[in-house]
Length: 159
Length: 145
Image (cartoon, rainbow over all chains, first blue to last red; front, side):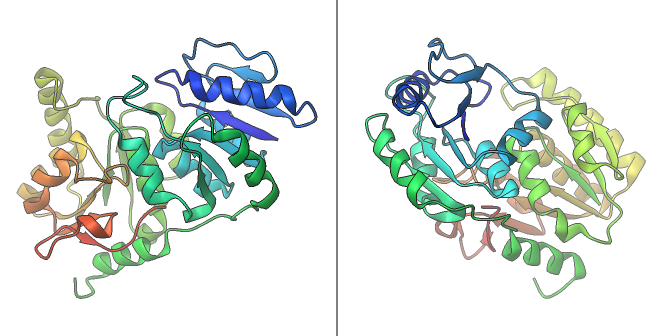
C-alpha cells in the first residue's frame, strides 16, 4: 500500500491531484491518502482529512511507501518506523507555504534514510514508478552518531 | 533530566535521541497532553504553547517553565526547540543546570532564531547541518535523519 500524507495544517492540491490521477491509472495498487485541508476530493483513492497520532503511525508501519510533502515531521516518523519516502516540496511561489524551506529540505535529505524527491507534480508519476521498482524498506534507522554525542556529554567525556 | 520542547517536529526530534538518556531520571515537558503516551513510564508535564510573536503567551510560558524548574531542579536541561526550550535553557542556568540545545533539522539554511540566541546558555550547542557549524559553535555531531 502507498500512504499519501500532506500534514495537518495547509492544503497541498498539486500532490493530492497528482496522486489521485496516478491512482486512477493504477487500479491494482492500493493508495490511502491523508489530505488535510486540501480542496480537491480524490475519486480514485481512499482518503481521510486527518488521522490521530496513533493511527497515523500505524498507517506508516503498514505501508510500503510514503508519498508526502517535505515536512520534517513526516520524515521523522518514517525514519522511526523504517519506511521509504518519496517527497515533493511545497512551493512558496505557488502559495503552498511561507518560504522555500521544503525545497531546501529535499536538496539536503535526498538519498538519506530511503528518502527520494520529486521536484514537481509533473515529475511525480515517473519518480513514483521508479521508487516502486527500486526502493526497499530502509529498516529502522537509529540516530547513532547524535545519540553518542549527547550521551558522551552527559557522561562528562571531553566536550 | 528535563527534556522540553514545543510540539510537532521538535518533540519528535527529542524522541529520536531518547537512547542517549538511558539511565537518566527523565522528565518530559511539551505542549500537548497527547504526547504523554509516547514516553509512558517517565514523568510528563504539559506547558502552555507560545511563540515569540505573542508576548502575553510568551510571558505565561516563561512563568510556567520557571515554576517547573523550581519544582524539579533538573541537573540537565535538554531541548530541540523552540520558545519553551530557549526559556528553559536560559533559566536553567540560574539553577546551574547543564544545558543541551539541539537545533531542529528543519533549519537547513540557517539556525533557528531561538537556536541563535540560546548559544551562550547552551553547554552543548548542536546544529544538525555540517555547513551551519562554526568554530565557536554550534557544533555538528550528527543528525536525527
